[in-house]
Length: 191
Image (cartoon, rainbow, N blue to C red):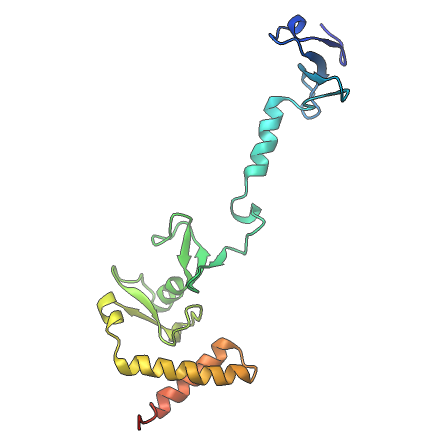
């Protein structure tokens, strides 16, 4: 049995190559084995055995959920502005386990699942404003044929909200205030 730190040619240790090998104990598990010795650096290529290396690599690869440095408590926003929550067990979860927050809030508010084929409509047009009073369950045909008046009200609301925003009010609050004004006063005359 070789002694720890003993150096031999690879052919003497059962390897085909001539490169030097050192008998070394793994730093993690302590199991002795032959490993390649780098002569010019006077050190072994690997200080831990292959089995321990695979365990270390597996721990580094475990970036799922809370282990991921970009984890945001299971919340993310897509490029369209919709907020998603991590709920892998939900029937409407995507392949990554995320569900739109608006779906979850409306389902909780209604006390049932969203009907098959229905969508969740944001009344004030702000896609991250998921308050229950701002959400409606609609079918796609109804959603596409929202009245022209509603679209004009939304346009006017956005204009008013812009004025509020310039006064330092947050976007959701500005939209809420503007929407209340437009709903109560109606649209201005087109003269």
